[in-house]
Structure formats: C-alpha cells, structure tokens
Image 1 (tube, rainbow, N blue to C red):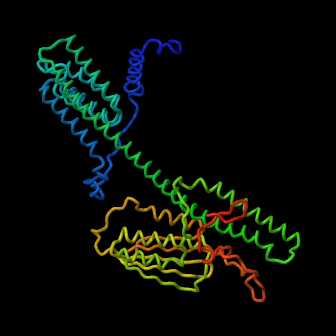
Image 2 (image 1 turned 135 degrees about the vertical axis):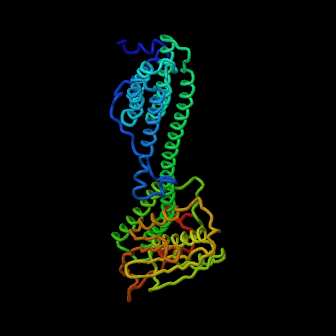
Image 3 (image 1 turned 180 degrees about the horizontal axis):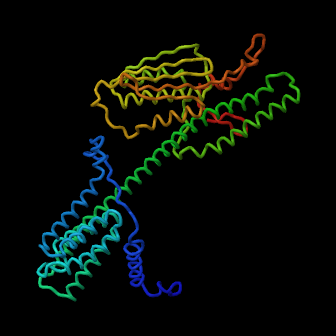
Length: 474
C-alpha cells in the first residue's frame, strides 16, 4: 500500500484511473451476485391508475413480463439457429438464463451473459456470426439494458467497455470472417445512452421535486414570520400606547392630590420608572422587527368600531356584504379588537379575490367570556372569473397566528352551498369594574389625551412613546 499522500503525488491522471478502478470493483465485482429482486411497477399512472382489482395487480408485473418475453424470444432464436444439433437445447437455455437472472441478480447477470455468449459460440453452428450468435446478440442487449436500468450510469459505461474488450479479444484470438462486434457496440451504445439519459432526467426531476418541497416549506415559514412580524409591530404600538398612559398618569397623579404623603409620591415615582423602563426594553426587543422603511401609523390601530367603514370600503369594490351583531356591545382589550378587525378584513379580501361577485356576511357575537366572529361567503356566480392568486393561503396563516396568540379557536372550510366559512372565537377574561368608576367615588380630572388607554378616547391621536423625561413623543 502506498503511504498517505502518494496518490496525490502521482498526479491527477493516476487519481482518475484509481477512482475508475474503484468504481469498477464496486459496481461489478463487490457483491456481484447479491440478491436484489426487481421491484414491481407503480400503478398510479395515467393508464394504470384507471385499473382496479386484479387487473391493477397484474399491471404491476409488467416489467417482469417484458423481460421474460425478451428472454424467451432470444431462446427461440437460438434454438432455431442451431437446427437439429445436440447443442441447441443447451444453447437455448444458456441464452435464457442470464436474461432471467437480471430480475434477481443484475450485476451477476452481466457476467453470466458474457460466459453464456462464449459457450453458445462454441456450441453453435460453424457458419454463424461471431462472437455473438443471433440469440446471444439479442440476449446480451436485453441484459445490458435491464442491468443499466436497475443500476447507475457508471455501471452502464463499465459494461459497455467490458463488452467491447470481450469482442476485440474474441475476434483477435479466434478470428472470423463474419464478426459482429461492431454492430453490438453501436446498438448497445445507443441503448445505454438512452438509459443514461433517462437516469439523469429522473434524478433531475427528483432534485427539482425536493427543491420545490424545500422552497414551499421555506415560503410557508417566511409567510409565517412575516405575519408574526406584522402582529409584533401592531402589538408594539398598542402596548407602547398603554405603557405611555401609565407613565403619564403616574407622573401626574401626585399633583392631583393635596399634600400627598411621601410614601404615595415614592410609589408613583416607582410606577413611572418601571413604566419607562418597560417601554425602553419593549422598544429594544421589538424594534428589531421593524423594517428600515417602516413608519409608525399616524392613525390609531383599527378596532371593531371601524368595521362599518371597512364594510363600506369593500362595498365600493363590488362586494355585497351584510353585518349582524348579537349580544351586548362592549369594549374589549385593544389587542382583541385589532385582531378581530384584521381577521374580518382578511376574510373579506379573500372573498373579493377568490369569489368575485359572491355575497358575504359578517357576524359579530359578544358572548359571555369572549367574542365570536363568523365570516361566510357564497359561491362565485362566474367560476371562470376566478384567477389564481400568488398569495393564496397566506391570509389564513396569518389569521391562525392571531387566533393562536390570543388562545382562541378557529375553523375554516367550504360550506355546503359552495362558499367558504371562517369561524373564530376569541376568549376575553372578565375584568372587574375599577374602583374609580364605582358610585360615590370622586374621580380626579385627567389631562386631555392622557386617559382612556384602552378606550376610544385614548385613540384620538397618534400612538405615542414615552421618553425618559415622561413626555409624550410622536
């Protein structure tokens, strides 16, 4: 054995030859007679997929039947070519055997075909072609084709080289006036080239399919991350607004009480400092989800109170939509109202995109313990007008993400009339009435724009952020 690095020192030609010999040993010598039965054919094609029952079962054996039929044909040709000679039955059997062997031991079938070719030439008629008799010629071509189909392109190249080497040696040693090595090499080269192209094409299709699967998975992940980023941006604005209100109220509270005790002043200072610190950390953590060109919206985030404006907008776009509200309308946490608004918006957008001309209905139910939403649309009156949408499925992903964030439930699916339905339930924990709002309690006046963090009064201006000095900043 040469020492490590000796192969590199001998140049690339040596390494190429050594690699080729290793490939030959691996493909045609190592485990050459290992048992490898030919698998049955898949029956999910355009033709076989229409079969059923026993016919479908028989169709899966089509490749095996074709190989056996080719072997029987080669055997009959050998038998007829041999005439009444005593060697005809033996030659016929030797012609059939390697073809049948390709079904269970492909690499060994190639070596057996070369050996049977030599024996058939010795047992055959003296005036026959050399070195392949007619039956052996067909049998060897079948063996080369089947083995190449069942192995790899490199194996096909090695079999062709060894076949050429056998033909040249047979002609050079024994000689014959009617040699047929040339036709064998030309025909076998064409067959093996076709098989190799088929291998390469199938491998390319598998790689493309795998890449498409990975791309679809990455696209789904990217869509999910984009939707989470959008939700994080919106929640950042909502939470920042409420924390700003807390900080402003904590700073202004001591001035609303005459001669407040020092303990109360310290408590409000602590509240303000914690609110400002929370805002700072919130901007630091969630600031990374903002794109460089992202600007905070001047208008407040929409809520269920803005549904009518949304419905008017989609009506202008040609969608016939109705709204039904049940239960006692009440103010919900702003995150719930924002998510509910976005889901109604997305459901109506999907109706415009995927069912143009259909009617829709939005149902909002204020129930005990939460909020129920139901958006349903009818079938498109003209299905031919529906065009493929590159963003199909992304809206549903975002809706599921919002529902999951709020620990809600969501079901989507087609209706019996051919439309589509989205049903959502968002749980809302009941909040006890604050002490300041109870009868008999005097409420100190609040500076305009500082109170009502979760209500409509707190949404009248731009969502603000608090600096370290406690002042409201756009």
